[in-house]
Amino acid sequence: MRIEIDKDLCCGAGTCVLVAPGVFDQDDEDGTVILLDAAPGAEQRAAVEEAAERCPTAVISIT
Image 1: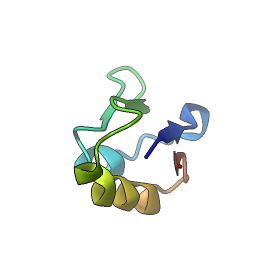
Image 2: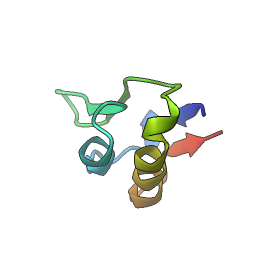
Image 3: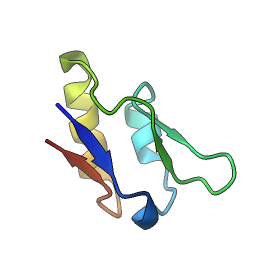
Image 4: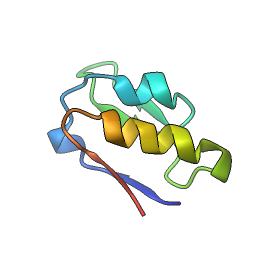
């Protein structure tokens, strides 16, 4: 699994951080997403997929 984000579209809702805190964080200055792990292990898959589904601006892509 590989994750990509479009930081320019991020609204800073923080849902991804709540769902998958080991993979995502938020920038202290503007609240936008920070990708901590672009290739997390299989144990993170369900959380990452949920984060992508719940993102209000659909900035998370999983391949």
